[in-house]
Amino acid sequence: MARTGIANLPLHYGKAPPWLFQRMVKLAREVTLAILTDYSPGEMLRRMSDPFWFQAFGCVLGFDWHSSGVTTTVCGALKESMKGLERQTGLFVAGGKGRTSRQTPAEISGFESSLSVDPATLVYASRMAAKVDNTALQDGYQLYHHVFLFTAGGSWAVVQQGMNEDTRYARRYHWLGEQVADFVCEPHSAICSEATGKALNMVAQESGPARQTVTDIVVLEKPEKLLANLKKLKTLELPPRHQVTADDINPDRLSKIILRTHEQSPANFEQLLGLEGVGPKTVRALSLISELVYGVAPSFRDPARFSFAHGGKDGHPYPVDRKTYDTSIELLGRAVRRARIGEPERLQALRRLHGLKITD
Image (cartoon, rainbow, N blue to C red):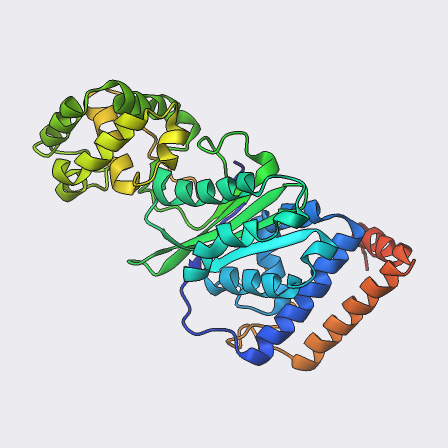
């Protein structure tokens, strides 16, 4: 995964005022329709998976460029803007913040009649993206927002965000399905946030041996021996890079999960990760056994490592100019409508202008 920059996202309380959010929905619709008209639904997925395009999109819509709310509000505006247009445009948006994120599988399945693929494959991609960022990559950020974008042909992208309760900073995770060769090995297109230096990264390239060892431990070791090793770990002085307490490796609490995973015999780490009940503490305990008992260490590398068009909702760098915002919606909407009735050369001209080098 290429590192192309840093975006620190502090938590800002409150929400976009109705007058602004209504405009964000309208402008998001026009921007999206312009991309869909001139390119394809797949291109919109690629752009949403690009953290800098996403950030710029939020700035154009007038939200705080440097706040955690840009993720939830931009995704919310995009989802609202596409309501009723999904089958016409071929772009579908599911999920959201908090409880809404848990409705993602049902929302995906609800579009089954419009899809040329089995929605179960999309539901699996959505679930695994969330499981990876909450369980296999333990960087101190708890997911609270998950949006799954997909096309009728089965292409997909994910934009999800976690919050660090101690620092009150957020981290955004971008996924693009066409780039995911392996859900559990460097699957992200980007991760936005300053690195913390404190992460258990089971999806790093260099964690490959640890992923295999962890799976072998669960499948091949007798549960009694595994639980005995867990008890031994409680008496050891753990390396400082491990963000683990004695409670995290409590054998009594993990025994049911260990027995269940042994009985199901997952073939690989991805299957292990996908098992119900296998959460962050289980993976942390198994990674400790892998390193301290079998000598196979996982990676502890943290994988993370714009401009204004209409101002920001909190008045920075200046208040939103409603008249200018409405004019932008009108002009872009007019361009899209003209393109749809046979004037695509106008948008092509805009693309050519974008490539010109302007000099004094």
